[in-house]
Length: 238
Image (cartoon, rainbow, N blue to C red; front, side):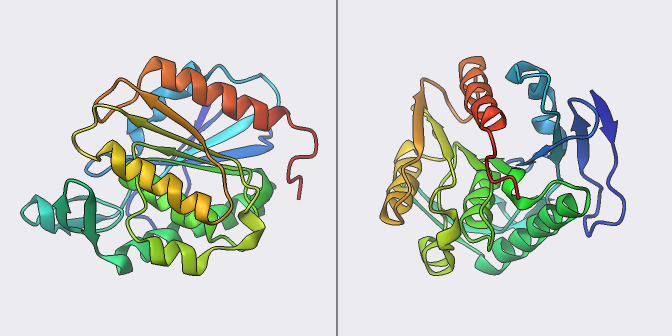
């Protein structure tokens, strides 16, 4: 696997990139959780057990630095500000969430310029990053190849429902959550799935006996799901 940098993007630090082989035909843009950075999920790539062909480019962007109100205003990498927390809800800064959607859209456009159209791009994210993946993927004007949403939620159902693009009704979605998650309650993950069902989307849902984290079993399941997309003939070949 070869690492690459991504100059010219509007990020304070270029995303981390890994390619599983030459001339990637698919790209996975993977967003980290609150306070982490792009290196957080980089190590899982070999554990996914993906086929040797087609090659995949993994892109791990770093969220902007911003003050997070619910964390006493500390500045950290965050895709949006969280104003307040409750067991089964969040109050967030929607403007920040839309800014992050714009950043991810920029990455999708850049992949098209590099020969990987939107129909071969998968968005993935953990926690806050998963919320960005949900919103960006389901409001994108072109259908994407898939969405992976881990230990996450839909912080603004209205934004998602109002901006939903019919083109993404058939976009495959892998949604997973730890049943012992005390950071993002499992109920929030199930609520997100219900929002998608209202839009006519039936995600592949998984629960794991985990706190706010991922496990080898979950990574194996993601690899299986992702491998099926990579092997699908003509899948959104754009």
